[in-house]
Image (cartoon, rainbow, N blue to C red; front, side, top):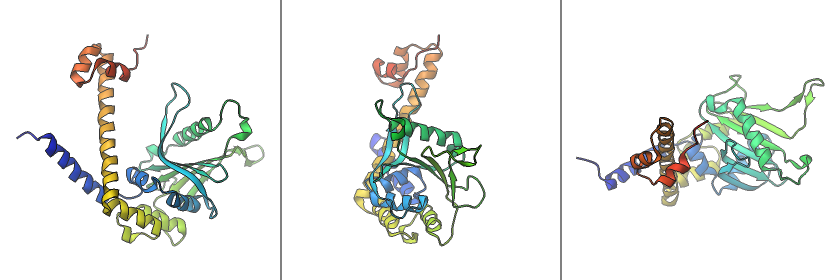
Length: 269
């Protein structure tokens, strides 16, 4: 018997609840929920990672879309924070080595620069920026908790002092230091197993409190809708490039012609 829409929604809901039980902070969907409207937690994490116990955040947003250059590739930051001195922080969860490619870190850093300098500002007004990749595995396989990357003046063997910082945090690192305990917490599914109260409290809220569970289920549904749209756009573009008319694509996709036109990239030549 064919599944009704109500049955499908209930099945998705139960699947989401099961996924939620298995989520860890190192899963990007859950991490965004952890940091959303939670400056104290983001502040704790950054203080430990960058080694600044007095760091104070004034702002932190999740899923921040950055794109100022028309035609350039946009990025959606997992967490984007500003501290009391104006420094900017991009915190990214990278589950696979492909997602942590150095070129991606470079691009994130460059987009943050473009985002933070208006046309009438002097270049020296660019804020210091930190791109932080928290990787599930030890990306550089050297057993270090954090790998710090900075531009260098190779002639003098000194830092270039351009204000850019890239940090790779080893999600496999464990010891009794704060960073070792933090990476342990990032890999926990249960609040009871966590070292830091702020991590445990937020995890408990998102997994046990009805409001927290509801917000996470809503986020997962939004991701599912977004994924379906991306698939539809890819299919429409492929059909268009094969010569299928926009009207036929719209009929097959069950959307109007104007929507399809908005999806498509014009044919080259």
